[in-house]
Length: 91
Image (tube, rainbow, N blue to C red):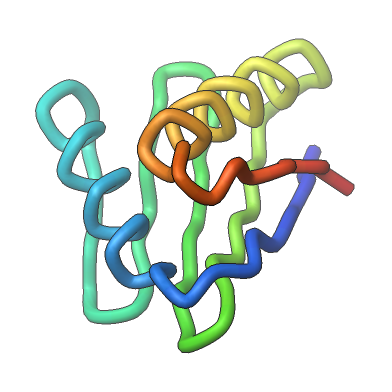
């Protein structure tokens, strides 16, 4: 199962690095330039930053794990980007 969202921000590269660095202390993470991947025990998140937005795609084996993965990623982004008050809606 998959869900994706886009957070429009000029700070996408910064948030990509912050998310990957934060989760990298706990779970496997890949960070390569403008892309990253976070492997949580219950799902994965692929991230891509550009000049205008941070694109995020979460995937998991079932709906419950997908929802949990999306919630964990969104809650951390909301905390790191509190000045921009992101409204994360997964599709």
